[in-house]
Image (tube, rainbow, N blue to C red; front, side, top):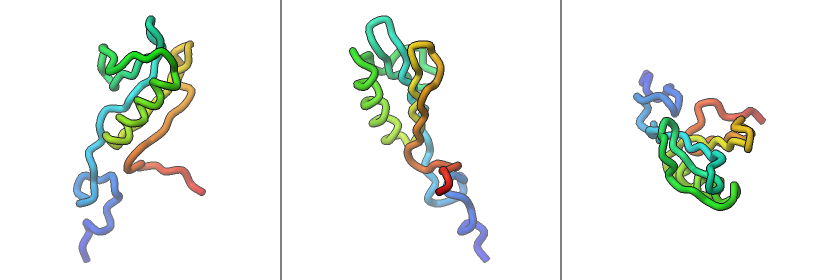
Length: 92
């Protein structure tokens, strides 16, 4: 029996495993809205509207198999989306 065939997709020993990039955060910025990779102090891109920032962050998160987290004006996370291999997909 080959144990590797029973590994979850997110397990590094699974041949279908894809490395995840940095999660992308959409945050309020003094010049509008910013897209920032997790742990980065500098914004990847600053846009006029939150919607523009969300669209840009979606592209990056999708390309990097990571998550996009949208923060409201108060700084709290109001939306979260996973792209790529989600280790905990929703049921149903």
